[in-house]
Length: 294
Image (cartoon, rainbow, N blue to C red; front, top):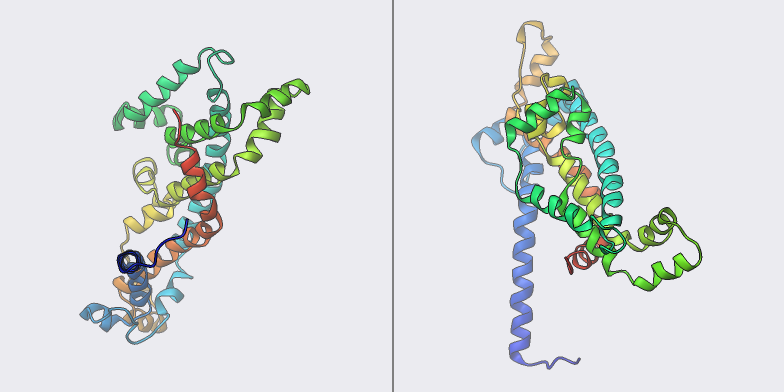
């Protein structure tokens, strides 16, 4: 279809481009400001003089973070949580979605399980029963409480179910004729064809486990087990001046909570900013095809 180069169409393109640039700036400017604040000196940050460029450029905040054992420990816990959580989410969601993508002729209780999933997505037992369940399983103050407490996202299951149902039925019929079993069809046919939606739910799981802070706050009884976002949410710089050397005290005079916290927040953004571009090309395709039916 050839578009006419009319004045109205050109104006529409200009307005659309300006709108998209505005939205992009709204998303980027807070990140840029956080970076500028983290690289500014204590006086400029306290006076509120920092805008889009660092004032009194210094990397003191980042130097301090590299020696902050609690921050590094929380960062490591979050990395482990993402690795375990995303893997468990991926395996459980795929194994749930495959049988639920069948018809009731192939899997009789299919509709019962789908209604149970939808009901659980819309309603839950509440915070106290959820907490008591985690405690009863002996998972408190362990990495498994962070991983298993959000082990299955029903919305992700529905996305994958719908994607599987959109695949040509003839593929499965041809595989059955050749003697393929359910595991072979799932691993060799369905999973490779479902890379867009699987990459999409993996991205969702990574972002969820990385950004979630409430579970760490409620389920962890010691600060040493806090994931990164819980640690950042509880940010307080505790200073013991009685054991400080002269050099440490001098460094402290150049540091403020504002710049230090900004540096920690910016570092916490980096993993998601790095991972997202590699999965972005699958995102629209996966979430669109996975939301057509059901």
